[in-house]
Image (cartoon, rainbow, N blue to C red; front, side, top):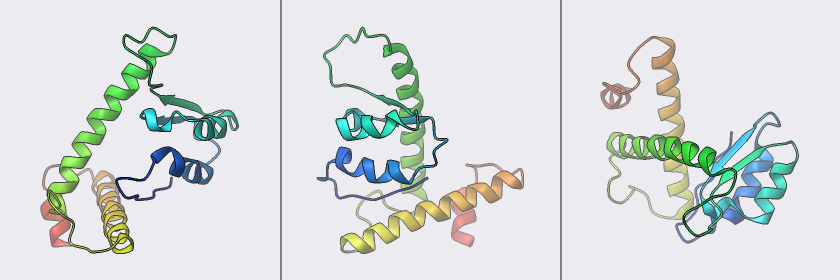
Length: 142
């Protein structure tokens, strides 16, 4: 897996190709919003036969053959992303500004926090602990 934190005004479709090149070849699904449905991203999904699931910016109602699959994946993605965002912001106290200045320091903070969060979840999973309940206290105690 790969990650890259961009400023809010940077086009995701231009950053995505760099990240896709870092993914293992056995990655089968690339899930993103309409910003990922661009030629460069689609081309990188052709080989090694990845399936890009991204809305195409077409007008509603969508009636193409993949609409139901995209609807299911986007609902799952939305639930996962929104739950993660809220939990992450609560644990690392970033409902407002992050405690850093500058793009490099902010990237370091955000990506470092995500890494710590993932390691904590892995530890708790391997030890049959709740993945949500008590996670903030667990991380603060570490």
